[in-house]
Length: 268
Image (cartoon, rainbow, N blue to C red; front, side, top):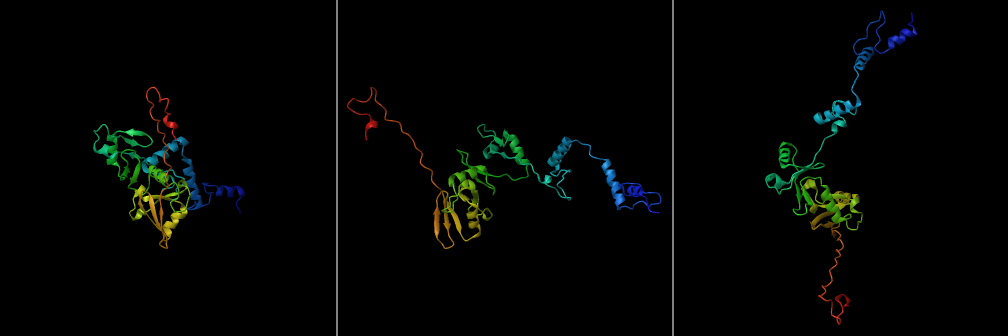
């Protein structure tokens, strides 16, 4: 006899028990899979949203890959697993070498404030990441050079303030819209130094990189360009207008100027 609609509905229900006279579904069959899913659903996560957030944060800090990551599609880390914490500690070299000198500058935890040299030395010894050397002017503290490809904000500010526009002769695109480029490619040994950096717009940056134009720095921010035809162009950073200074008037002698002599400012 054909099965009734109720019997068919019960037979197709997830996790339903087999009817009398029916064989149980073998492992891997849809009925068995539905039963497993039903058992897993019975053990639902009872944590609150705040507890889940706390657990995910703990996983990120301890393993860099949270166990609950909806962006993970396989055994590898998902988007959340790509998150890395990064801190920046600035330690004056002389302060580390001679920490007993009370006049040495303290170490700085960027975003927090000064930290003692003892803690800074512990960080220097414990971290497996190599430190980046930053060369600064001893008086002003202006950053001049780093040992890495990535520039500091201070170097970018210095180069943009010096160049003020794209350094391709004839291009006036403002430096704020340009890229700070290594004149000599960093991959070829060019340092991350204000003497090896210049602002170029995207068009002329690509022209320098992919055509026969060549450029070199000859000192003081001056660029020497050579066209594919061998024509040389010298581009100097634009000079700032001289500062206007007001000199004081000549001192007036006691009693004022003589009656027969006009004051010094009256002379033509």
